[in-house]
Image 1 (cartoon, one colour):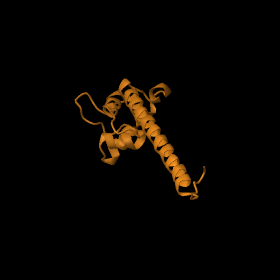
Image 2: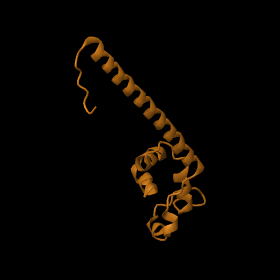
Image 3: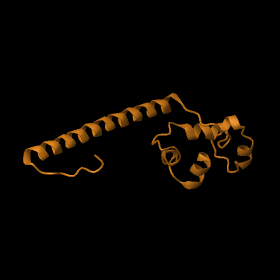
Image 4: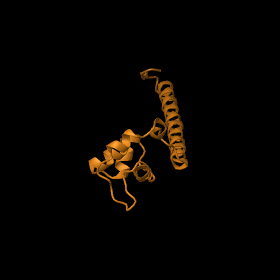
Length: 115
């Protein structure tokens, strides 16, 4: 499906990859699949009729393959998101503390939603 979309859409491989997976870099996977499933001939020409080849793929071939680079990208992204979450939690706690201090210091009532 990804290879078909790439061949029909006119988008770059990275754009297609991001559209289907959410990751911005495809690390050569589309070209690898094009070779593996017969979309590209031995002389590097794109074969225009590829539907019969798709029907011959086994269920095992249709499973997405995760390379070490993909896993590395996911782990890096996960670490970035965890860091952003920690920073957001700290900022939230700082705001709540500032509000509490302001309420006590200036004897005012500041409404905090969901708190």
